[in-house]
Length: 191
Ligand code: 5GP
Image (cartoon, rainbow, N blue to C red; front, top):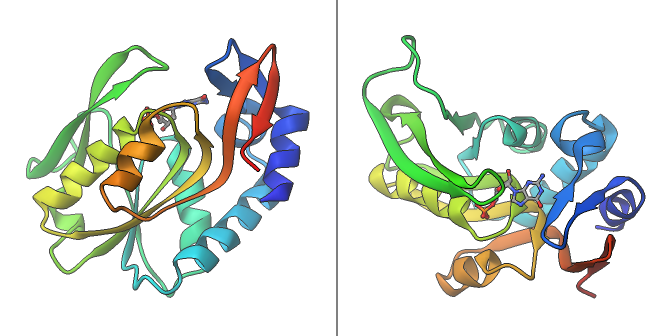
């Protein structure tokens, strides 16, 4: 997606050779027009997949999931919660996700009310790196006996292993920009 790649080149910032900071348009301040274009493209890529629900993880995934859901036929968004609270249901699907950007694992939780065995689920997330977030969400989908129909990723870092792991499992992934390398602050995309 050229609009997204141009935005990454103009407004993204590399942190070392592993991390891309996109706080000015995706992760902190949000460029709503760009997000809307991203939502349209995700819809185009998954419109034949009979999606019944979009699943993501709080917080960065929520805006992306919501803007994408508008293009489907009235499907809900469910986001996995990272923190326990008194008003969270006790009947939960849970799994563990290791975050290499934070260098720690965290628990993700989804109420059993909101995913069931008839669901065909589209996962939406901002980044794909080592694949742990997608695998954690897949575990929740599996616990619910629902179907993982695919994953829509805004930025895949192709030099990390997640893309290969998820594709080798036969899961459909659509990444809107795939980064080949980050060297001396310069981001290079795959084709
Ligand atoms: P994975 O679970 O695939 O290893 O990593 C994906 C998750 O880590 C994403 O949900 C995202 O929040 C975070 N992440 C991974 N790499 C980056 C990065 O380069 N920049 C930012 N901002 N977040 C990242």
